Image 1 (spheres, rainbow, N blue to C red):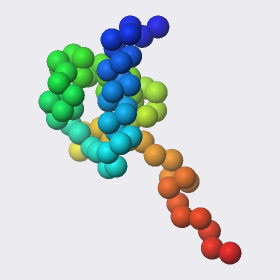
Image 2 (image 1 turned 120 degrees about the horizontal axis):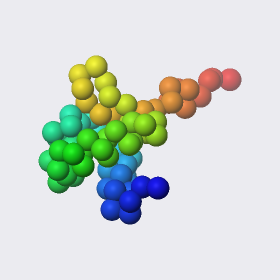
Image 3 (image 1 turned 30 degrees about the vertical axis):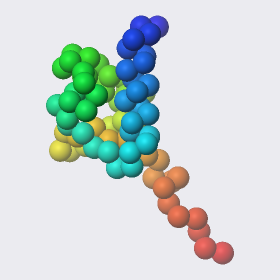
Length: 77
């Protein structure tokens, strides 16, 4: 079970990624934006990656993982 404070941090970061389209942050940017200590920031980002919500791109930024099938426009009839 995730401690309540940690769960609240994960929820807060998840909500920000959901509200901000295209948000991509390095670990240090995330720490500054969410006012987190390095260890807390790493744990939150790792948790969100482990659950499949975030991914780390080739440039080291954390961005929201999206299903490409759901991002495609509907087929024309």
